[in-house]
Image (tube, rainbow, N blue to C red; front, top):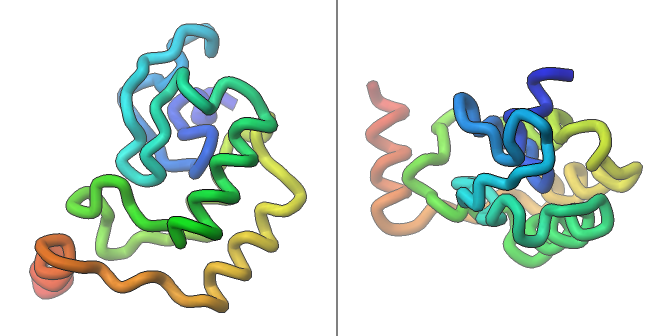
Length: 122
């Protein structure tokens, strides 16, 4: 799918209008995903690496945003993970989603918490 070209291979966040791996899917931009913090071209270069990074982001980082200011107030973790490009998905993705939902999201801290409050009152 064309939309997959714009998605982070680890967490599924849309990078539109940027292409994390270029038009051909082979030339990484070396940009950083605002959500999971992966550097495109460093660590997300294959299925096994993406699965390892995803598991770490969910289980250890508890889906904490790399750039909390950019996290939308209406962020939908399950929808985002379900939008990971098909070639980089795992059968365990649904288990990771459910485990994170059961554990609850980590609370926002500092300025990102204030920003979320401000966004929700607008």
